[in-house]
Image (cartoon, rainbow, N blue to C red):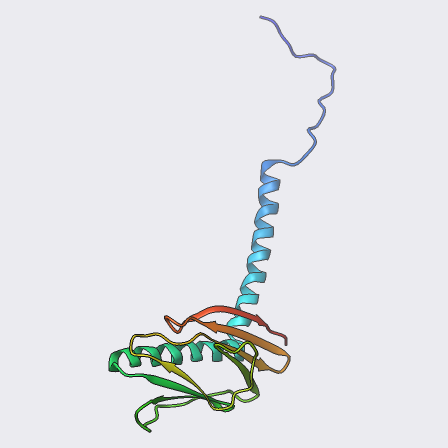
Length: 165
């Protein structure tokens, strides 16, 4: 048998990383990114603007649903203090959704192209479930959140924000 091993020739160590070293480095990077993402997600979920936008979305969706169930138009009246729901034909009010302390907002009601301060605007929900498109921009200290509501569902269609501590 032919022996192809040469004696006396030193073995040259391989250059580079082993598979285990690469996998360990990737694991550490993934854990770090996951921790950073979790902290960032937690901050946005507990911010006063985020909490209020979720409450507002629920309020809007409930108004839309109630309008369809009653088969009559309902309105959300928008003032600088917050939002209230009323039947168009009656003076009966439902509970208000008030702004949290320190929060202000602007509203963009279709067909306007400019953001406006709230001044007793009315957002009507028809019995067929439709409403006009509305966007709301909330402010709290140096943070802001902008939400565009879907006219078909009342859900937040698009949301952008900048939260600062």
